[in-house]
Length: 603
Image 1 (cartoon, rainbow, N blue to C red):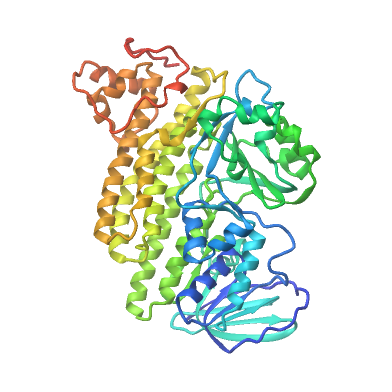
Image 2 (image 1 turned 180 degrees about the vertical axis):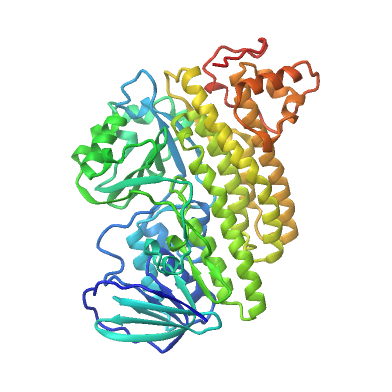
């Protein structure tokens, strides 16, 4: 019995025919970043024959492609696994982490120095990059084309895919008016948001994230550090260099934050990518529906941009009304798979798109290289569980606590937690290559599942705190600067970057230690929030209160918080942290009440 997927396309412009064979080991549908990088990975690790088909006549396209920002997993994948390091340094900017900004109350916020900032001051030891998507896709196509096992066929139309349970699969399409048919052992859909196989096989699924985006590119470099009245000398010597350092801030993915939205500034050679991501339930999309409206909104919301953006030439633009979705299945023992945006997509806030490509392409590559049918079936089941777990773990971050982006303190708590999880449970495994080892995956899933309930309830707790703060705390009237690594748990998670070449047993022990580290971080977040709500820093050292935190029952309720602490207030036993629990004192906006009686505002 076979499954069939058929898609009809308008006949694209003519292009010279590519010589195709009758049979390939792998056919990849779609010559975007996912498909080109999968082909590169297969060509580097095997002698499989590959056919890459694409409906567009021009690769890369004339229009600019969005999705430029890499983080550690994607950066490692493209530079080390795909061996593109020299190209990345030559043609793209090395990225200076993610940096975040908030307006300061009582100021016009016309100058960069008016904004509060949160960041990691040093470069990551695992390099990441700001990708010009058009450039890297052109490079991947060139490199793949140098291998005799690779065939590229474009433009194609009237694609018809027949997937067989016991193989081979059959594909038919038109190329410049000629009918072409091929057989293949594997078919991998990397067609992006066209989602050819997912749509035809009924695999599409909605998720709880309802976000949209509007973006554009302008000519030249938008250097936010220079959006000021200060002279170049004054910019060099301003006092807060002591906190933020001297590295070029424009190299970062810079995020300007608000409740339920954020605006990115990403540098590329000769141009700057600018874009807004917003929660559709609270943000009026009509305000940013055109490039002109987007620039007007940004200059009004973050006035420092009024110095620059209205005078820039717009090079290209785009947007999505509702970009997030899931998928029932993305890899199957019948030798088909989906990678990149043809399967699942969450939210671009932490630049996870290329991470998904890296992990899934690695799993798909391993499956393609597996020749034993029974072993392949086991791997596909396990790999699907792994990818589904990663995807589902990210949903609460974007569907539950997006409002918390609007406050520096609440976002700091949220991001430090999420980044610590990312460093220890995502980056560390990927740089050690155990993601295809069954023994490691089973152990990883067991440990990672324990974070699920903690994460979901913690996201809701942080969101509740944000809403409470809006009516119970005045915002800061001066810019605040915070390095995320001041919270020691994040430094401990980052230390896993230097555990390389470890055995499966060593990896398990490291993850056990990191799981304990994350639990302590979660307790710290609850303790910090409780200490602010109850105006009592003694909570941090009250062992009875700290140990009474049950993550499975966690919810933001000031009355319950007050009552629970009242039961523990007289306990003499001290709780000892492995890091300084008072590192966020600058956010308190209240007198030092370390020895005051507990108080609470319940309204």
